[in-house]
Length: 214
Image (cartoon, rainbow, N blue to C red; front, side):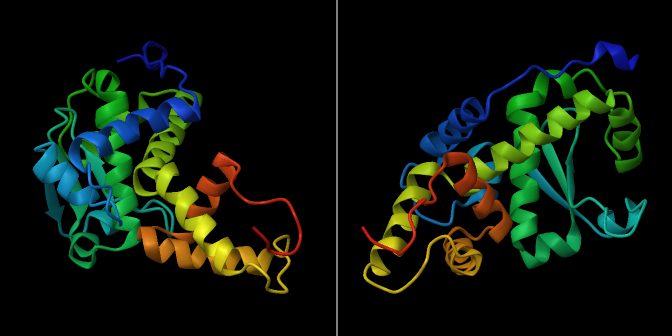
């Protein structure tokens, strides 16, 4: 397939959030944290999660870039690295949320291909122009962030942290203060601190004032 035929439609960050929250609303209405992304995919959406030994090692081109998961072009199976699947790490949770995004947001694009194995997947992705592939991956990352760290819960838990700190001699402009709070929130959402940091920035939730106060 000629790569000029692949075009990834533009989606605003907030629009991606609407789609992710639609998944939560339909398949996890209690909104209890952490969001059970694996159960949503497997039980709620009936998409298989298939652990494959050595997937990450087999997909390494340069050190550190091996993939944790990919979705087949039939959109009914997410193949994941067996070690990551067993450990249920935060990276694993983000990876399967990212692949769910490709199903929910990019299904029409992936259906244009016919692949099942990781090598076939690599070849298929090469058919997508670099700029378009970058947009596709950005959208999937944004969706995963919204799914794992939904705005409603992020706002509430961040405000709770700030309320607890009310009256303390803490400068909210201090990077270490923010880092401590984000690590705490990462535990609450079972996501990485980086994902929490990006979500706070995107939603413009971090207060701009100095000392912590209500």
